[in-house]
Image 1 (spheres, rainbow, N blue to C red):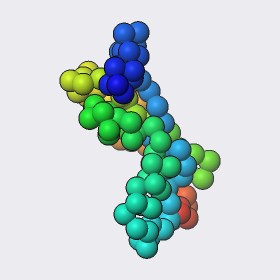
Image 2 (cartoon, rainbow, N blue to C red):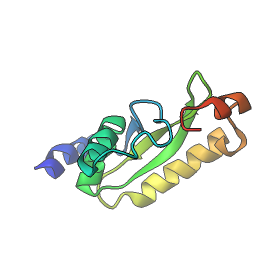
Image 3 (cartoon, helix red, strand yellow):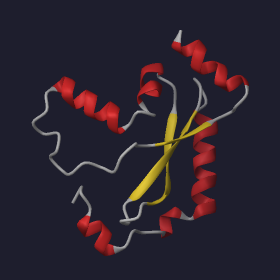
Image 4 (cartoon, one colour):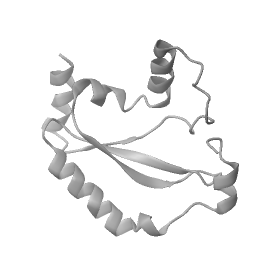
Amino acid sequence: TLHRRIGALFDTYDVLLAPTTAAPPPRVGAMADLSGLDTDRAMIAACPYAWPWNILGWPGVNVPAGFVGDGLPVGAQLLGPAHSEPLLVSLAARLEDDQRWHERWPPRAAAADSPAA
């Protein structure tokens, strides 16, 4: 089963680190006219690293990971097996404290020019 195959990773690793998305965010309204199935397909394509965890029902937490060339923020996911929420939240808090992401903002021009604006 998927639980057993992916769960085997945690025999060796405590947590997985993966990108949050595979592409920059779409423009606002880009999916407004899509059917339910087409919206699901678009979301799976944009977030191919997240959907297996959604299917498994296992926890993951998104953390800031920097800014792309045009100044948009990007994230990373800390992913764990069932019942690993305390570990994931603890790691996310330590990263936030260490990296001080709450003090970092993209350049104003990048935020105004972003596809999501």
